[in-house]
Length: 318
Ligand SMILES: C[S@@+](CC[C@H](N)C(=O)[O-])C[C@H]1O[C@@H](n2cnc3c(N)ncnc32)[C@H](O)[C@@H]1O
Image 1 (tube, rainbow, N blue to C red):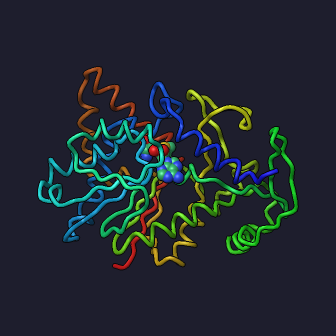
Image 2 (image 1 turned 180 degrees about the vertical axis):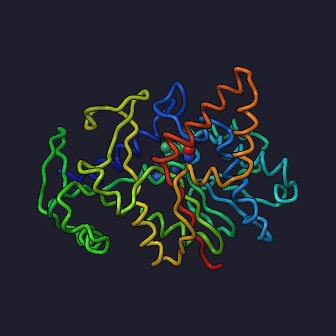
């Protein structure tokens, strides 16, 4: 028997370290940077004034997928602010050897430094759909979910003081539903804060706040294979993930000196970026098939993804 957390950690590690396409039309899922280039450019435009304040700015991206967001961010800086482009160091922390090879091709000629661990940064730590890959403990009313070698579920008495502390601190003790506790997310947040000497943390992912947790009485863990939800998550290879608990990242961030500047929906975030809105307006006046296609993709970023995804912006040492 092992905890669901250990099971998920192994599944995710196996998934991302195996060969084969993961992201995009021939993979298992799409992400926002894959959908349209306006996403990475909007992130760049948003970060631009913050990065400009640093003498020698760095950007550390966690889990960069196929490298498209890095490409769009760096292309934006190269075009709009060559001086910043010239002095920016862009680090990528990536666990998948396969995706790293893809990134090396996509980002050929771009000033990228790949790192095997989080490195000290004065600037920004950034991630899109990274925290949802981190494993969760699954609990319900004083019991924790364990999985046998043959994939049988068992609810054993909860005996993990860190999980119990989390439930108390977040006020979830009396919830009569599945609650997912991502201690790995808290630990990653601590590592982000340790790496961030001075600057900002921008985290984009799907998730919920404590006010919204009751919308997920059966939890949020989901497996994807070839763009479809997998019914049996205990057998076969798949992309396994869980929604991010943003309230927990805000609460525990305080312990690590991370001050929350805002938490917004992805729609609010994108609509606050002038270049994104101008691009939407420009495309809506064009009648070419490419413009219609791009407009529809940008609407997906705003509407279906726009509400499910949130953007957390935190600062440290400023
Ligand atoms: C869902 S994908 C998102 C990719 C990309 N950010 C995007 O938006 O297209 C998760 C990414 O995180 C990476 N990853 C997962 N677990 C990781 C870990 N423990 N350490 C470093 N990277 C990890 C994966 O290899 C992949 O690049």
